[in-house]
Amino acid sequence: MSTPPTETTPPARTALSGLVGNTPLLRVSEPFTQDGRGFWAKLEGFNPGGIKDRPALHMVERARARGDLRPGARIIESTSGTLGLGLALAGMVYGHPVTLVTDPGLEMSMTRLLTAYGAQVNVVSEPHPTGGWQEARRERVKQLMAQHPGSWCPDQYNNPDNTTAYTPLALELATELGHIDVLVCSVGTGGHSAGVSRVLRQLYPGLKVVGVDTIGSTIFGQPARPRLMRGLGSSIYPRNVAYENFSEVHWVAPSEAVWACRQLAASHYATGGWSVGAVALVAGWLARTLPEDTRIAAVFPDGPQRYLGTVYDDDYCAAHGLLDGPPALEPEVVGRVDEKEVTRWTRCTTVVDPLMLSETSEQAEQTEDVVLDDASAAEDEAEDERL
Image (cartoon, rainbow, N blue to C red; front, side, top):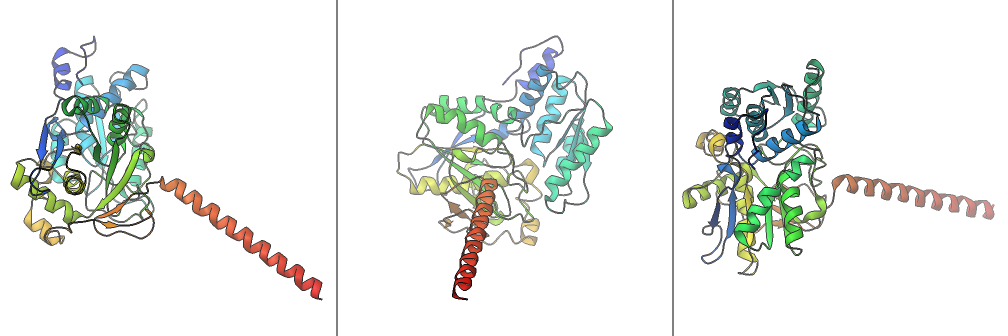
């Protein structure tokens, strides 16, 4: 992932980008699965800021190459934290001021860290009426860009460079594991699940991709609700999500992710935030239930540092009802992503783009209206004939 030195990129700053990538793999087994079984976890928390260092550097590099981002221009983007760290790094490497738009849910420790890295942090005060905090942040980005002529927004939710940035991660997994049967990824912007699965499916045509979302997220067709977990989930429909690549999706509740995070910490000395806990819970179940020789790769997007005041804080967890004990051994199962609103770990093996689902529902309603109108007309004609 390192960038070769150029006239505008001093060698010292290039060395900073060289810190990104080639993260370690960890074999995870008990207590998530029985002895002799397990899954491989790619520890992206070993990047300086986490997994989104990869797309931050790549999106900035490609925008500069195209001329979309001029030397010294301001970078402005919405973030729940991790991409913000990556953009702060990219701004430092390439010499761009960075403004990050976030919301009151961002941990104070993360705000302080982003500020320490030289980024300006802009906080929205009210959620959007229908799009929640995410849409409110995106609207603020537009306002700030109007105030800073020549500024550039990566638009991580729709930028295809966000997905191609993960080609090196996919190749690292392929090189280290030799073969992969199942890939487990959390889904937020859709970038790393789309980018990694695109490459791995070319190498392993039979690959199954399992997406992990949070309850209250709209990404896979559930209704939008206030979300405690950050880093995965969305209140909008990111167009980078490769719905066609997923074999199934699992929704996980905050208490279930907390249990998994703490089990990882106590048993493997490696853990992370909400996304890591949710992914570990699902990957462990897959390792227990699939054939023993199934090779499962799971992406752990970050480390535990920013979650010391939430996931790993007993008072915080108790106040939010997150210490209820271990989750169920099996997920609940639904046949359709919109069958019902899920409130605990739930699995669905029919994955569709919710926007397509909405269109199908509207078409069905229109068809039903036409049928009813035709039936009513036929009844009127029959009545006329009787008269």
